[in-house]
Image (cartoon, rainbow, N blue to C red; front, side, top):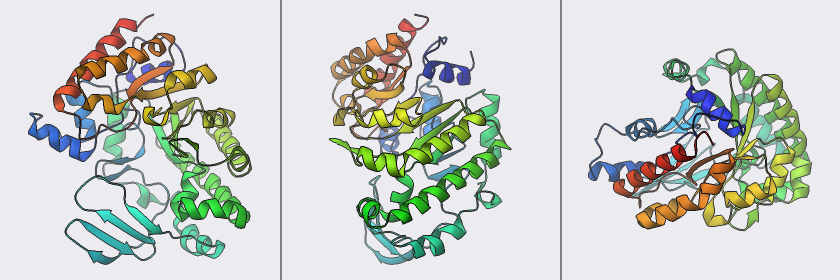
Length: 373
């Protein structure tokens, strides 16, 4: 069975020769730590680490457009050309930028998320003058060097190929930040609808442009619309500002042969999962344990929602006994099908090389034990 068939069959609740063996990637600091613990220095990217441990290529690594170890990979999506950034302040460990991008402080020493206090869009005029002229989906400048080689490698390996899509919370949040977005739902709903309408049209054309280069088997919507205790938006906001656009876009994707719709959100997505299924989600990830998104709870609500993730990343920083307990917990789901066990986020630098190697070995044994029923 090819890697592509294996992945699609597994998330379709169909019989595969085995479940894919994969995770979500690795922080740069984690890879640096493992170099100090004996991993060869030339193993320095997510894709190389996957191969080093004998893993299947992760489904996010098989996207035609994704955020890689050093920035965007494949085909640029969203804002292009990027907003300008003007250096305002620089210290030993951080740098602050202003300009069209807003106001952003980035760390120079680690993998922490940039701290942003001002965003590009505050009004309809901002959206029309700053964003619209940067949203030509057919601009060939979006195709990065190395894309053709990357695509050829995926085709030669018979991988399932997917596309990354900013979702209907993620995209306006990128433009205006979560706090302003929350107010704008009520203060200026026309602006939100304008953003969502344009985003839908952009993604349709963007995907059609990609389909001229390669067929696509799945789409990953990035959302991150939950926190530790639940959804960041109410069902009413979801139904008003997201549902109609999701339904339209998902229909467009399915008509064009894209088989599976996967929606990514950290946080507690147990109740939110009901809304994701309503708009067409076939699968959901990463099932973040620290927030209560246990895959067994999600499965009890949605018997045919494929799940990826759900292994507590924190256990790998403890000891082998903790790893064994985590893998034992997800065994019933593995028996049921429609589930790919993976860590519930990137592998963090508190995880030793020895512990990760043990986890991969034990997970591999478990997957082979329950393959073929």
